[in-house]
Image 1 (cartoon, chains in turn green, purple):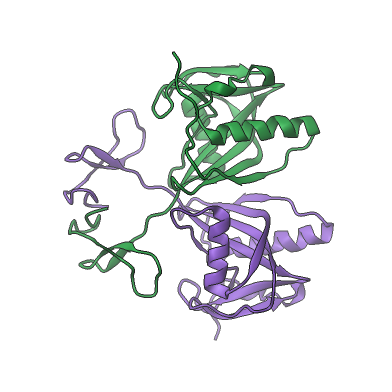
Image 2 (spheres, one colour):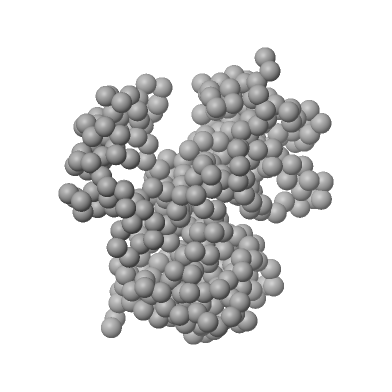
Length: 185
Length: 185
């Protein structure tokens, strides 16, 4: 941030009185422009024994597989964001089951929140951000072609929990590069 | 947002190609300035049968009681944010137990994430944003003097779960005014 978004004058970068971190401050408007982490919200869609993955049609990680998820918008709830992203990326009709995986990524100022969700029908198809959308059994998951560590971690939890017959809520941290693998084709 | 934070020129407000919501766009820099919900993160500190509340020394809800919580910063994890806010507001030494209450507030673009945490000692004292910090048994909770619905909801869940001997993770929505009550003194 170089300029005040309210008045267009240059901002200064210093620690405000009573604070302990440098902020972008507009001395003309007398306002502090805080910067905060963003939420990436989505679903783990389940159909019987299978889960739904999307092959990314956009960077980063073009051509790799992921769960439907994206940046949360203002004026929506976490569940609404999760369902919206699943519709946008996979045209999937889902029913939320429970919040499932909450992952902090402090190095890129993101928090992932992923829900377990029941796929209600097989009428899904790729949205504009996906090349393909496909159901996978556990032994078919393209582990080496997953887009992000957050997704790999969540799928590992899911299959382990399913074996144990109990889904708990997983809260964890990915503190280094989230992107996985390289496109091979 | 009226001006681009990168170049200081006026932004326009329209739906970008391929999008479905109006955004603040700088046609000079060719960038879209997205606006996203903010995370409010904190703890529910527990000492034996008691919970720790802070009497607010700042608006909104000056003089009303709350759990230690505040806006998450960049470059921290949810747990680090929860512990930092508890230190800042109550100088409380805590050990995180588990993620507990996750609440969407779509009307004010906030998401609360509150952790159950064990108070490690009684050396707590009010930080600059608190007038007082105090331990309460369930029957002493100042229900009519709580600052926010999110806090009341989380405390209700906590005491109900404790009676049942099992703490689950609660994910809910507060879709109207979060502030509770009025200061009476």
